[in-house]
Length: 560
Image (cartoon, rainbow, N blue to C red; front, side, top):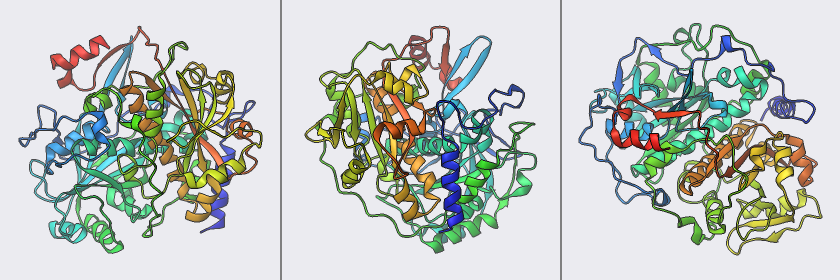
């Protein structure tokens, strides 16, 4: 591990904290002339429309109806790999969820949330020969605006078999980030937002894979350079004048319980695409750019090595009866209706069973999205409870790995209560008080953190994680916060509520509140759940034209 790289991580992390009298560096205004275009495309590539578009080949695909509660255990029967299955998974993880309009402005929303709706995350699919797509293995860019694949590379079938072995039902999703999308608005803090946005996307893919009975598994065997080669990010000639993409992670989608990639398998796959037939030129998102060298520095410091030794799994936590509660809502409809709330009513309350069920679903389990990660839980929740029936208002702590309880207590103020707040959940009451003003203050004085049922901060095991797994693990800490956030988003929707991720918070004010005096634990992301107040000035339409022609889908949007 490079001491210089680790120093760079600490320097970036501390240098991009928000403070009451000084925010992290940004332009301080929105330069609308350089606003990035919302979608990337690769010109001069063959394209493949995806199910459920009426232009796509359906392959006699008949998706099984799944309720949100059923996404805990995997489906008994996995759907066979086909082009329509790929379309189903991408539609319900990375596709468009809706279009909003407030005259004269009109903008798209996506299934996977993003800071400021800026969407730095791009996705690629790497798969073997697929009927209705191609007779040879290939690398494809996913274009969410058109819900289709752009073929970037075709490569040798034998090389694919050498890489994946006798595993016909497997494909890979590669996630990348375009830093400029976030930096345009948020400046130096943008690297943080790119990472927790990527975590949201990982969880979205994990949930969507579960819809078809598949499992999504992040593969740490792919290094930074291997990911770049696999997705063609290192092809300078394909990004002339276009913003470069930062490697994120490789996710294997498989019917197996798990899929492991050896170093030899990774090298075989990377070599196969290197010798493949590439096409396409990346589109430019902005003509003018601002260079944020701090982002470039931390991106270099956190480049990921190939990892072969995985962490041990944490001890299983008791199953909470409220984790399986709630209405049997259709899971596909649920992920498409997810929205980020802009305001809460500040009056409605949440029942205790639903609240505990939400918390139970963010604990580690052999279920999506937690079975996608290769590391043990590193993120814990400090909760500001405002309006939950039969739960006293105050500050609470959800310890997602009980083995860290003593360490977390030792880092906090001695006067905190640490009373057990539930018989089964690792939930601890720290103080009895009206925490609304406190929650708003630490979240950059935003009322949405106080008007909710509850809000929270996500506390990462910072020092120990970086010391043990190196500076690159800085990314994984943010990914985990995004995964927690995505689970809470869907839990809120299932409960008839709504949620919002909060990227603006006063970092060290949170730490001072709890008594943290070192980097042992750091707050990385805030979140809030409540009863939404809708903006009646907005009109909402389905994500794609064919859905606007579907009377059932169109009626749902007119009602909501």
